[in-house]
Amino acid sequence: MARILITGSSGLLGAHLMTACSQRHQVVGIDRHPWWGDEPLPAFVEDLSSPAAVQRVRDIRPDVLIHCAAL
Image (cartoon, helix red, strand yellow):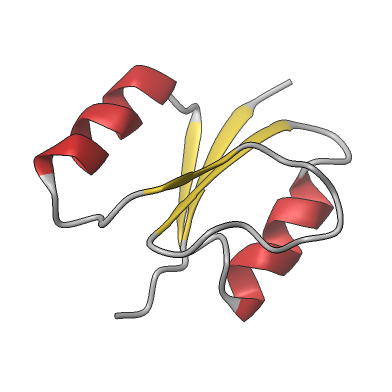
């Protein structure tokens, strides 16, 4: 099972990917807005331009990173 990190996890594309990928993989989201999906999936609220977000990505150690953050 791969560990997938999805940036922009509260956006339209990111949220749908979070739900779809969670069926077969360990999925973690990161976005500047809170996760709003129906399923209780792990997601962190971080600004991707901050050093804290970079450290969070290092701590998660994803096998796959899917970048869906738009702004």
